[in-house]
Amino acid sequence: MTPKSGGEWGTVLSHLVLGVVSLHAAVYTAQASRGAAAGFLLQALAAASMLAPGLCTDEDCLAGAWVATVISLPLLAFDFHWCTNGHLMCAGCFIHLLADARLKEEQATCPNCRCEISKSLCCRNLAVEKAVSELPSECGFCLRQFPRSLLERHQKEECQDRVTQCKYKRIGCPWHGPFHELTAHEAACAHPTKTGNELMEILDEMDQGRRKEMQLYNSIFSLLSFEKIGYTEVQFRPYRTDDFITRLYYETPRFTVLNQTWVLKARVNDSERNPNLSCKRTLSFQLIIKSKVNAPLECSFLLLKGPYDDVKINPVIYHFVFTNESNETDYVPLPITDSVECNKLLAAKNINLRLFLFQIQK
Image (cartoon, rainbow, N blue to C red; front, side, top):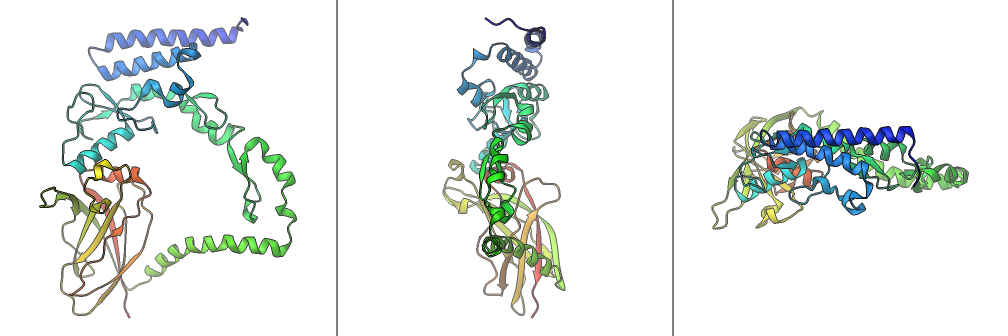
């Protein structure tokens, strides 16, 4: 057995003291506050895992066994909420539970004790969040263990095995590889020695992708030059259909833009029967004009996130010609980046977005 240095013994002693103090605090706060006690207990377990690396298997550490989430979703963030009885839920599980309750027209409940949960009834548990930030987690590149609070910086800036790209990627080099091989690759990379004609072919292919990206923004700038432009904040409220098996849909109150009366409707997963059973969730919407028009009304429109929301929506411009006979668009996708962002919207009591309308004049 290799003897430990003075610095190593100091580290061991600090972890031992932290574990004992945290365990003592967990015991004496259990009656007053279960959530705080859980935080102290996790801190003690984190200290124990640093003292005894063999205490948990590699698989346990990788999965974050100390802080298993309540509905088996991966632990993506340090935010933890707790119900009125002290049971913990990570932020991802909490939002997922609220969204599921909305889809099933039920009151969201804690998976452990079935008490009611909501954004107003539950609060974050800072003691647990601090403890989780110190738990060991494995780097996906070099497989070494780091505290969760340091893992992101290590993977982005310090890890020698992190995936990186060649500095000549701007002239077409497709190489991806570990950081420690980057210098050797760039020294042998053939792209700097290519002829002008060869580089022009590569750059033309890259420009085609850039043109598609810029087309959207050029279209928005063009629409902003129109004479008649209107926008408003819209609030989607949840309703249920009158079918035997009801289905969730959203609708806004009537609003006025461009001197016309409008309504927006939205549905989840194109009104599939049980969207709560699906992991992939989407929202689609349609725009309806409620007032009579004397002539065809050609419009471009797009929905963006509201000023107080953090949901990620990619801008997409839609076009439609409204008449008295054709007064509603087809359902078009609300361009949310992924199902996690969709759950954020579904978990809210109402969905608040911003609608832009541009009237095309001939």
